[in-house]
Amino acid sequence: GIQEFQVLEHRWTAESGRSVGGVVNVVSKSGTNELHGSGFFNFRNQSLRTRDFFEKQTPDPIPKYNREEFGGSVGGPMVQVKMFFFVALERFRERQNLLVNPALLPEIAAIPGVTASPTIPLPYNDTLLTVKVDQRYSDKTTLLYRFAYQKNDSPNDQVANPATTDLTGGNTDDNKLYSLVAN
Image 1 (cartoon, one colour):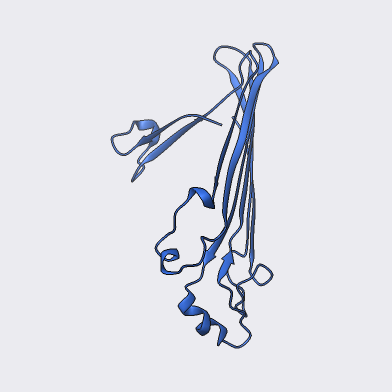
Image 2 (tube, one colour):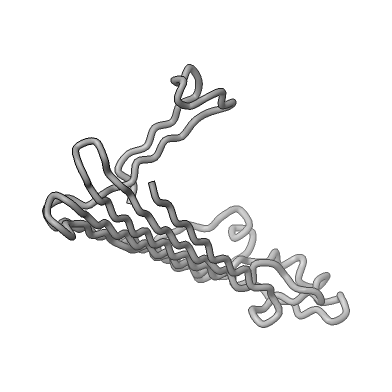
């Protein structure tokens, strides 16, 4: 849903004020008088990756890994020349197993109440939705309405207490964010 962005490090204009460090300007896409859309899909799994440093320390097979990113956008007129819409949806899903150093498994298993596992599943999901409406009154007056929604969750985000390394014992990190702008 981003049309363009600008990063200013220093010597920005008076409109940016006395910001320290930097300024980021982002312009979101808008609908036009014609219906337009786009889509994308990106996929990666364990056959497309190599072992990391810790995985090279063991002869075990590469842990399962699956990453999918997909989405699309569509924009167009609601009322020709007067009102336009734009909708963008993005979805990110990652399924990964983190390999536990095999030398640590006996030490982990020695802790009372702890179940040692050679891998820790770390799934992650993220959904982004943006809906924008531009209402044009004249060449100099336009109203903008934008709604943004993000939901991400990560089951087994941290290990629970008592420490276990399976999905049933981990914590779930769930976030839902809403934003509504009228300008």
